Length: 65
Image 1 (cartoon, rainbow, N blue to C red):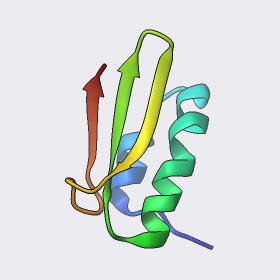
Image 2 (image 1 turned 90 degrees about the horizontal axis):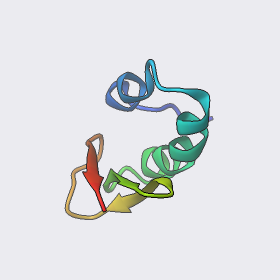
Image 3 (image 1 turned 45 degrees about the vertical axis):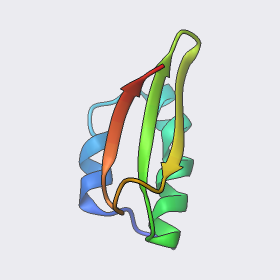
Image 4 (image 1 turned 135 degrees about the horizontal axis):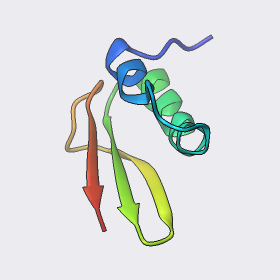
């Protein structure tokens, strides 16, 4: 089983379940590959997360669209 790094666990702490369900799959992918960080974009329809090759593994950056 893939273990999320502490920085990802801390990022998810206190977030609502819908947000966690949206972002967690991308955090899991990042943790499996250990190559890139994750950018979480807040747009008018909600949140979207994706791997970002400009961020080091373990970093989560929130951005707006």
